[in-house]
Image (tube, rainbow, N blue to C red; front, side, top):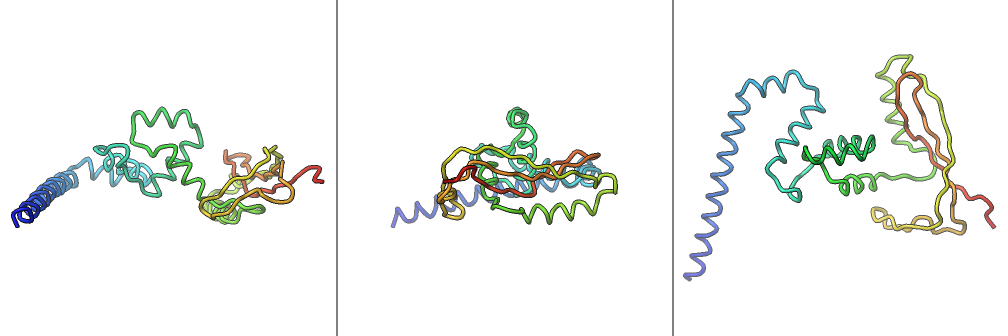
Length: 197
C-alpha cells in the first residue's frame, strides 16, 4: 500500500512539474506573440523564411536526437543539401537542420521507375503556369550514364531491384533545362543494357 502511494505521489509530482513547465512556456509564447518583433516577422517575411525561423525556435533547446521536423523543413533542407552538400554541413554547425541521414531516407521514399516521372511532369506544368513567356523557354537534354552491375533491396516496396535476366549497365536520362532562367529537372529515366547475351 505504501509503495502504491509513493508511486502515485511520484507521478503526481512529475505531472505538476510538467504542468508548470507548460504554463511557463505558454506565458513566454504569449509574451512573444505580443512583441512587435513577432508582428514584424508575420507581416514582412515570406512563408519559407517564417517556417525556417519557426523550426529554429522549435528545436533550439532540444538535443539532436530529440528534434522534430515537419515535411516542409525536410524538403527545404533537402533542396539546400542538393545544391551544395559541403555548404549544408557547414550550416549544420550554426543552425538546427535535419541530419543527412534523414534527408537520404526522405529521398529514398521517392518512387523512381523506368519511363516518364509523372509527378515531376505534373509539377512542372503547375510551375510553368506561374512564370512568364521567356522563362518558359527550355531545352530537352539527354545523357547516358554508366551503371555498376548489381541489385539492391528497396525497403519501402519490399522488392529486390535490378535482379532480372539481363542486368542494366546504362541509364538514359532526359532532363529539361531552362535557357533564360536557371532550372534543371529530370523528367524521364530508362535503363538499358548494351550487348545483352
